[in-house]
Image 1: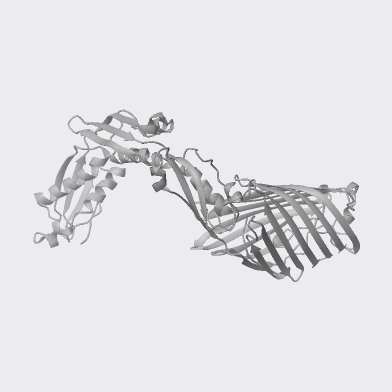
Image 2 (image 1 turned 135 degrees about the vertical axis):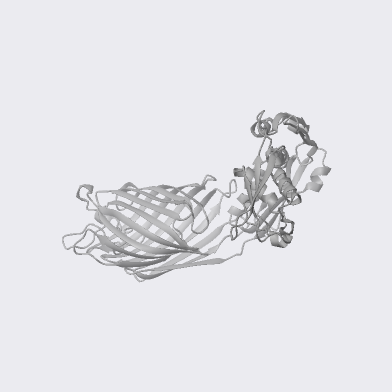
Length: 580
């Protein structure tokens, strides 16, 4: 059975109803906006079998239009019809002309509050915010929303015995007036009771310190959701579900609501794999192995391996949450070994780092570090062995929305490291670094990625600074179009020495071609120098393709330098991994 739109083509002959539906064109004039939409919904309920130019069909159309206008406050529209025939093949037209008339207006809203809501400041604020102004045109949807707001706030704030004793929408069509009348009894507000944990492998003394409320505090759904979030974010559990025990709570005279926390431990081991390819370093493979919990105190262990033909890195981290705040505060012990043989750099470095960390709910992460490293390296034919012991501090934050390939997000990291021979380090230095990535999407199809990296080393013994602390530019996530870490000051023989200053920026525009596929245009520019007065910006431009895969964005890029006479190479990059 077919349906009609508001302005629809229905053809009528002078024979049968089915023939009418094949020839008559129905038009409705005088409506727009929400009024038009509501009338359209009601007219769509008319069957083609009812189509006819006669009075019965006209009455059916008029009734449907009135039903569509009434929820928006127009109870007394004037509807007239005109019928016009045309010489075939033109079709006859039945036009419904609508004159809205005077709307019904809200003249009074009466809300009687009983129970805890009577003294709860949130209820007067809610009523003031949602109550229509005197003289506002009646809207049935706004009335229902107002009624729902009263009950929704009750659920949100723990008035679980709330009752809407009266909710009346009074309408005097003759006087064009409406009165809203409510009697809402919220009952007594419930309070948080004890939490009972089930299925946890972690000590309850740690879990209890994740609870964001105290027994006896007033219930709020936000606090319950925050508790769930904290349990999930520990990484200890595959699932965490916290629900109130309403049966016991309702039986309590004081409305104390116990909570049941059902926890399923996360798998003891899991592995992540990644990889990429670039013309300068060839294929690279990444593997991570993590034990999200080792013991009942929630300690965890993670190791990672990154291998390419030019660089090999293996490291591990042992994390020890603090019982007082196991989600946001912890100690961490990290160790690693890195070997590099690329361009004019050959180095072997062992590292050890002990840190105190704060991961705040705002997303900001703070870390105080004490690092030790032993490096044996050759940089531009200068060989050194350097032992470093240096403290540092870092501040970082990552925010994102939109899944593995976020539509909105940013990443910030700032760090300061200080080394001094007074505490037996082999070299004095101060290192400042800043990293920022910014992602925004406009009108769903236009995505922008902006990146900036800054670095500064202050030292009088640069030759003793290991290559891993010096700055190089070029390659993926730096200046595309140039070979990996190929941008650097050089010595008299033209060999790369690394830089004490770094400034790199990137602007990338992506357009959604189809589904999960995006095209990309980008420009990267910057320099790694020792003297900013002698800087010579290097710039690369290129294009690429992005695929938003289930495991994260996969990219394919082609880039070339611009503004250089002797360098017209085209570099090719394949990468898998997060952009932030």
